[in-house]
Picture 1 (cartoon, rainbow, N blue to C red):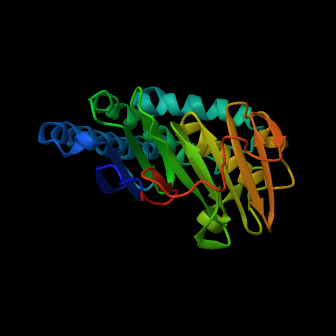
Picture 2: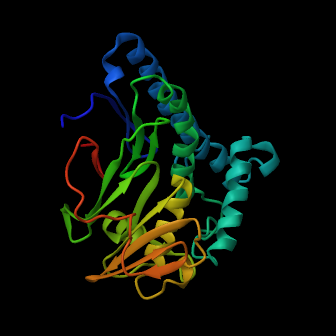
Length: 284
């Protein structure tokens, strides 16, 4: 079967590469294409606006002003208060394995990319209602939010990268909708810090998580990578996520807080190429 026509836009946002794609035969129609282009532009614009608020590298961002004591929490953009509350809940939910305050000040970097993608993806809902539009996705540095039009049979096949071979695929996840995120030392190196010890996570470890939203998938992927293959207790409370942890050749999987031998329908290592094939780092 031939691949579906698609509109794909790639932009640098939040220190990474963001790819927005809308698939469907109707995308070749000029009127539909115009609406798709507008929706994709809205996704990118929302993420760039979020970046201006949350960037820890911009002295004039709301997060930087809060960090430097130039503004209080009541004086910053309402989005900061929303994310700050989210980070407090996640710190409690993860037992401190995720902690936006580990540096001594509020740094929501570990959650804001996924949160922003989720919020920005709302701009794609209307075009997914157009006849002949099948699916859409936002890929932010390899972490993805996947959407499907009502009644569509489209399935994304997401490749989970092999931590030992950047060109290899450890497994494949067939997913109609939802989100997939990967975190680990292969992606972040010494920047992956255990906030409980304030030390870099040792060795080669990688975790991939599937959830309904990228906010959840991204945070729990980081938690699983920090906890490591020998400690799934930190992720057993993640009843809204399923995942895989790899370290030193060992693989452990869990779904809805329970360790399992295989992903059942979530992961299909034999899933082959097709019109909806997708790799974790780029659109196919």
